[in-house]
Picture (tube, rainbow, N blue to C red):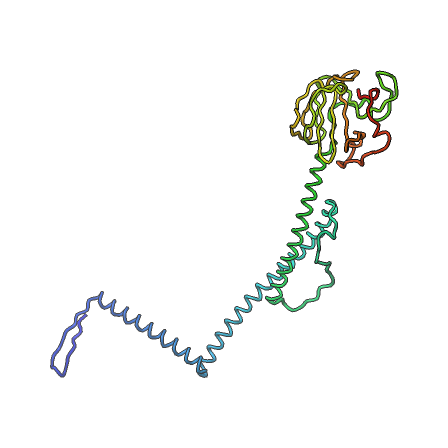
Length: 323
């Protein structure tokens, strides 16, 4: 493309040649300049019209701004309504959790006054009210956070109590020490050696030689040695003053100081010591006082109240030895 530029004052002419590429670049440059000028003019006119409240432009700007505010408010309202529904669900779940915590707390032996509970029962007919504000939602969230902290404290205490109860039950001799029937029970009887009345301080399990003897509960072995009357004997301390004794064994498997768990093999049935035949003589002592082992074996994991009557406190003399 050729352009001829003529200067009348100087009486000269100048020819300008533009190729296709240069022409396209020139048109694009011109278009960009026009776009920037239009945008700047539009922005300046709108700002000036909005500030000085020109009749038409001011109305348009106010309409646009009002529409944006309405959309934003509608968006916030929808989100607040969704949050309010979620809060309602959370409150209902917290009430269910509180009721469950109270039931479990009763099983764990936790008294209601030990944990302060600030929430109260709620109910009644539903009456539609105004939507919640952001401040009200935030306040409800704060209340839920406080209630969650209280529930966490309560459940932590209950967990500790339940673990403690479980450990105590594991440390109470409630498991049969040998898989055999009971032949002679706790109490007064005729001594098989001298025919006189004597106190039998435990249970005799009629088992064959070599049958495994297991710990009736977990604890620490405090004695594992021969005894002139009990024969090969093992004593396990279960804590809280509870000790179980296993007598007349043919072989001792554990030694003093060993930690044993419930059901762990500790010895083998025999007939050592003051014994008329193969059996296991099993005793339970609480605070050093002989107790009826059947109360433990048939119990619910609780230590029976020590019997401090004349029968339980009679010393085992020369004619009152276990067999």
